[in-house]
Length: 154
Image (tube, rainbow, N blue to C red; front, side):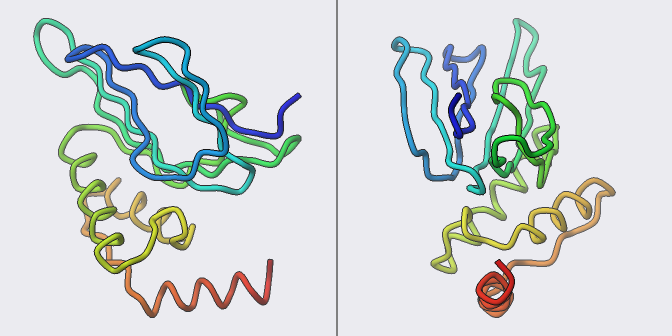
């Protein structure tokens, strides 16, 4: 049994598009030209974006920011993710997904890898956007506080 969290990615142009926006895969397995499996080490964060359409337009736009779990730890089930993950953020609907993608871009603009950002920041974004409020931006000082907190309380 693997310690890794596996994410199945599928790309059927203009029908089903599942991709990873950020995160550091420990392994990659290419199944065919449209499908692959990325695997993430325990305690790593990644953003999983899913988009599906039919003949009438978009039917699913979703982003999940997930924490890969340690084997045996409780986790939530997420489509295409085995065995599951801890959900830091889950939003659906293109306007919200687009806004989260912009927030990820803003974190990167600070020179910070979004996979290294504070877990509670992604919870904050989820909570604020779930009630149509504007989340606070991520800052370098918040990131430094997170890094310090991680060092003293692993």
